[in-house]
Image 1: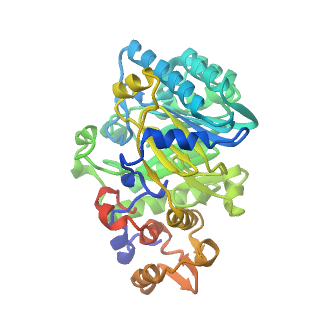
Image 2 (image 1 turned 30 degrees about the horizontal axis):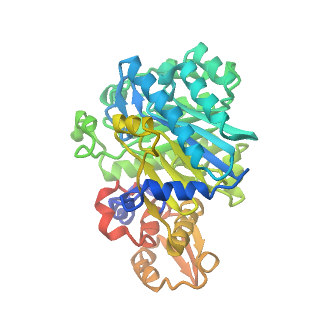
Length: 447
């Protein structure tokens, strides 16, 4: 993609979802209740393979750029109360499950999950293990702040069976780090990597962000070079979504220091160029993996998936989420927990499911979800393969401007992004989103 491409820049300025789910969370409503959640859980059968997500929405300090459901917690009693609530929710949900499932994936997200402490994480894990069978090849992943990774923590995580760690690196430039309220010298990241590998946790992911304040192509080039030297298996690089009207902490960022749309496109292109030059394969839209990584194998074999963690080789269609704001994906649709941390703790403390909203998926939703995921993963979709009996005349007509602009190629039922158009695949996905027109303003820029 040429960074001076005015056509691509025009589409890149459109606000569209990231499509880590379809329907997106913007379509969730209170019409889906805890009673629905209970019915859906009851349909889980013994031995059914599921993924599990544990959400810990606390950090010791809040970064200026953060858009996650996260709060500052300085008191240990608040953290301990949340841990107890998490364990109680696991017990409550398990009482509703129709049969003891098999956990094929476990992912700790946040926030900073390690804020629970090694003993706290082990306590939650013990409760989880008492209600789930564990697949012998389970992937056990945790998101970590490099500033909090000590040799003792790394050793404890290894002893718990953690076999993948995701480090929030974001950017290595000192001035950018000051501007985003997250100062972590590259030496600190190197030390975290060393501690984890010494503990036997060899599978490492790095998260980077482009579009940050004071960030330039030159600073990003240096970040990519320093990251490549540490040789993580996977790298995700997301575009920063600046929404200060919705996130008070983002008001601490001077919007005048943010890159403009053309500069963001140039930065995204630079990241792709630098990382591929360092031996990484592009995976979908914003991920990269070493050629021998399972994600790269899945991408080449057409087995790539996309969920709330981004691109994955996770083939479990069912995800059970625990914690405040956590989202579950069950056969009938999505269900989300209370986002208010104290309210979540009170609700589960009363022995009730914490779910308060969600989205039922009908057959049309299921087909469109498959279309959008296939587009996001493979940059093409055969509509006849996914929904042979469905009429997409209106959607194909809406694609005409992008076809004329050379961003999309359509031949019969086959819709394929051109190389030039790949960076704006989210715009094409939005055309197949039947909810898109009423919600477009709520989403981030396409690039």
